[in-house]
Amino acid sequence: MSDDLPSRRPSIRDVARIADVSYQTVSRVLNDHPSVRPETRQSVLDAMAQLNYRPNLAARSLVTNRSQTIGVLAAASSMYGPASSIAAIEEAARARGYWVSTANIDPADPDSIPAGLAHLNAQSIEGLVVIAPQVRVFRVLAALSLDIPYVTLQSTDLDPQHTLSVDQFAGARMATRHLIGEGHREIYHLAGPQDWIEAEARMRGFLAEMSASDIPTTAPILGDWTAEFGYYAGRELLQVRDFTAIFSSNDQMALGLIHAIHDAGLDVPGDISIVGFDDVPEAGHFWPPLTTVRQDFAELGRRCVELLLGPAGEGAAPAVATISPELIVRRSTGPVRPR
Image 1 (cartoon, one colour):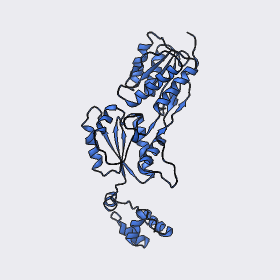
Image 2: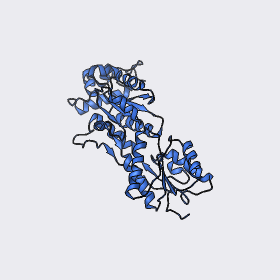
Image 3: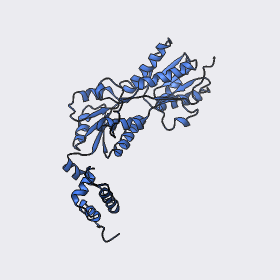
Image 4: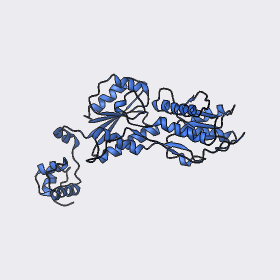
């Protein structure tokens, strides 16, 4: 290392010395002040790179009254959908110069919700994202006074002014319409858990599409999102086998269904067609590859951050609060075959 470079952690004054500017100028560059000339800005950036300088965010927040932090209040964050949403938000936030702090809550414990909010507020978050799939969480939030911008990532009318979501209802109709288009009339729906907002929206979409085609339905089966439950449900349903297709509310349960059908010596889609929801990274490698509904989590994260912070560029249109899903047709669905 050069003698000009300090052995301790570099400071803003070290950057100023290397760039041959005042420390106030370095501060202006850090805060993206428009008064700094381009060549001066570049000189400061080069010095920061040379020193491997990283701004002290805590100190900077004291000066600017801004923490550059977005909080995420999350339930079930280990599941594919919520985990993908958090990852997308973090990527979009970093692109805007923000950090993300996540507080995980237990939906069954109402006290964990205000405790999670208190944890995030202690970090002076500038905005909040709520990724909580259960209705009960929103009921607790409705009773709290949130004095910062926030957005909820659910398809719900519980808080319509702050909601951003993939259209779960439309996605379920797409999946069901695809099966009907293949000639299926005896279609079951393996739904998600009761009280989960997305599961309820997908169930409503299934029932609406079946009704629009004047096809009678049986009561949806309430699952728990796991492949294990899908396998169990498939084994039970195949004892009667009064269906030719199943729309599963997520891909993991669809995987279990396919396993059960294969174990019974039947073929997918020759005997039974299966559609999932989410398009998990492994869906294209199921056997057969799974027809499913894809959610654009990267776009969800970008729009979420944009709703909190405003458009990234001048003249950019404001973010639309609903994202359309996409049906991905693979080999787990096909024309109905006479039995």
